[in-house]
Each structure stands twice: as structure tokens, then as C-alpha cells.
Image 1 (cartoon, one colour):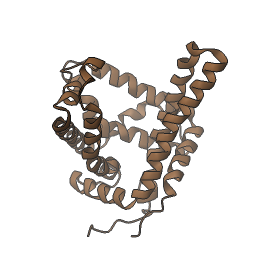
Image 2 (spheres, rainbow, N blue to C red):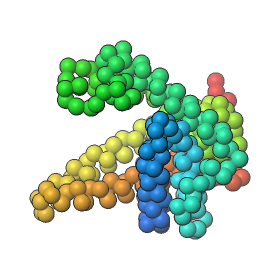
Image 3 (cartoon, one colour):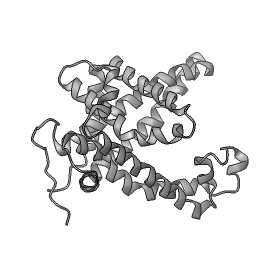
Image 4 (cartoon, one colour):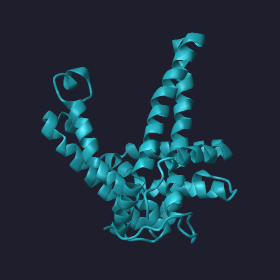
Length: 263
């Protein structure tokens, strides 16, 4: 299989917008239901810190399935949040969530070599994020180091959940295929990520500046909150095209690009 065209990254973003436009209220309600559920889980002592990360693969399939519903012309309901829990692959998705936690711990722990553990202490709740804590530390560099170390894991996890649930792969086989799929689509993912960074940084800045000039600074947050909500939901919708353009649509359809074994 040859390299994936770089322009596909922009197409993924456009298709995410297209999916959102078909059911904007429904997908936003699904996301808000997810946030509410995570808030409720976060209240639980000890487990409240672990469960939101552990269940990321499980809940990610709710948004992937929502996109399948939209493509099929079916309504999206908050009950889709239970999609991963009802799947026979539930325990495999939980195992994947455990690997999420392990990878995050390794990345953040390794960053302690750069800043003496300041970033680690903040992430684990041992210290608060304030100017006094950050001043004199190399926390910014530590965050960059942690991100670089976590990148291979992110590549391995990107497609793993849908491969586990839709293509019935084992956890480590799904991780293997995901890593090399992202690697071979590297240029497309670069365009995709760059586009989202520009949208996530430039668009809010432009909108807040215009609103601030026209209506005053006090109204900026009233506009930025729904805008950031919409952008986040669109981003979730765009995850689905990144899958279908590489592996094809779920439920027995022919993959768009078959992945041969790694060299």
C-alpha cells in the first residue's frame, strides 16, 4: 500500500463538518450528555480520576456509532453512550483503556527528567498549577517531552477501539494495525492536526476580538463557549472519516485500503 495523500487530512475535517451539519443538535446533546456523565463519575473518590481515562475507548465508540447513524439517516440519541458497554468487545475496550493510562503515566513520569517532577506533581494533584509553582521550572519543556514520548502511543491507540469493536481484532493486533496505519498516513494526519490547531487557536481569537469590539469584553465568553462546544463536537465527528478512508465503513463493508503486515 502506498502513502496516503496529504490532502486527505483536509477532507477528514470537511467530512466532520458535513456530519455535524446533518444533526447538530443531536450530536451536541450526545456530547453534553457525555460531559455530564464524566462530571458525575469525577465526583467518585479515587475512581473519579481513573475511570474517565479508562473508559475513553468505550465512550469513543459512541461517537463513532453516532456518525454511522447519521450516514444511515437515523437519529442520534444520548442512549448511544451505552454502545461500547453493550458490545461483546467491552472488556477489550477496557483493556485498551488500561493501556491508555499506562502510556500516559510513562510519558508524564519521563518528563520529570526535564523539570524535576513539577509537571508530574501537577498532573497527579500533588501540586497546584500557579505561577509560583511553575516559576523557575522547565514545565513547558517537560510538557513537550511528554507529548513527544506519548506520540507513538497515540498512533497505536488512534484506530484501536473501532478495530477492536468493528473488525473484532484482539487488543494488541488492533494497536499494531493502528500504529502502522497512522504512520503510513503521516502527511494526512499532519495536515489534519495543523488544520485543527489553526481552527482551535485562530478562530476563537478572531471571534473574541470582533465580539469584544462590537459588544464588549463581558460578552466574549457567552459566544466562545458555544463556539468551542461546536468545534469540539465537529472534531469528534471528524474522527469517523479518518477511519473510513483507511479501513472502510463498518459492518462488513470492503476496506478502502487494506494494510499489509509491517516490514
